[in-house]
Image (cartoon, rainbow, N blue to C red; front, side):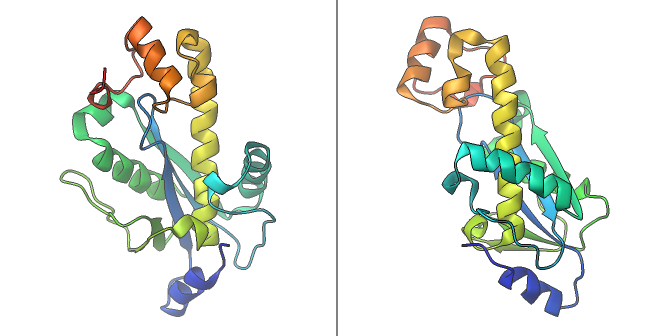
Amino acid sequence: MPSWELEHKVMARGYRAVCGCDEAGAGPLAGRVYAAAVILPDGLELPWLNDSKKVTEKRREALYSQIVDRAVAWSVAWVEPKEIDEIDILNSRIKAMQSAIDALEPQADFALIDGNRDHGNRCAIVSSHDLVVKGDSLSVSIAAASILAKVSRDRYMLEMAKLYPQYAFERHKGYGTKRHYALLREHGPCPIHRRTFLKKL
């Protein structure tokens, strides 16, 4: 379960405003990639907080409200499908995460970043940071960011489902399920499909 251990280790190095940062939606065939950054009040306990993939949709929605209400600062950023095709998904993930960190008010002076990559060939995390593999199950701040990113992206995909009902985005959120591939073959791609992800068609 996520704890405050990593945040407190960073604070012991002299940093004061430590944010967690995570992204959602790197793998889908359609839609934006989202990222969130969150600074929580030191020691805040949120029941059920965990890696967003390990939390039910109902609890994610409840946690989203609690995080937004209680965070010192939070932000959500994204990169559009067209740009994902132009700069690739790694650069897009990193651009979204740095954009989320930059949008925090008040600003963070250090970031805990989920994953093991902090730069691509075009974009990089320029804020002071540590990379944390499986950070969303270790750090409360990264776990909170994972919830905000996941819920924000899911809400966006529900809006896209209304615009493009023929793809059943409300069911698979753009991921490459058998049903999604079948609907793609039937209807062809729409404006939010990532063309560089459609190699199997």
